[in-house]
Image (cartoon, rainbow, N blue to C red; front, side):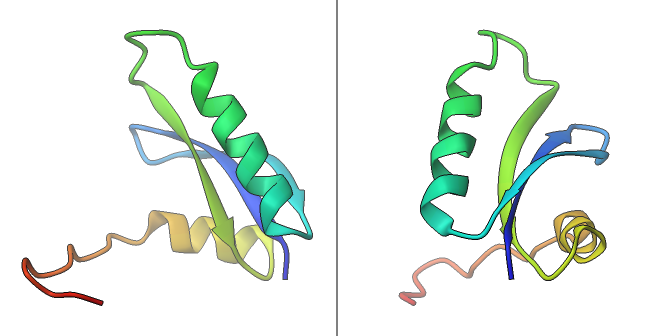
Length: 74
């Protein structure tokens, strides 16, 4: 399964950027893109996700995740 890099907007829309077969390549691009976001522009961010397809990646990105309970060491 590939790693997908997405531009994620505050209104919960997604724009695919690229996909990579290896974690390291995807992580490097995600970090690079995050550093290029203009100062004060909080309208979007970049996220990396591991999924079987673009559709699955977007579904996973759109799910609201529960925060971990305080004090839980996992």
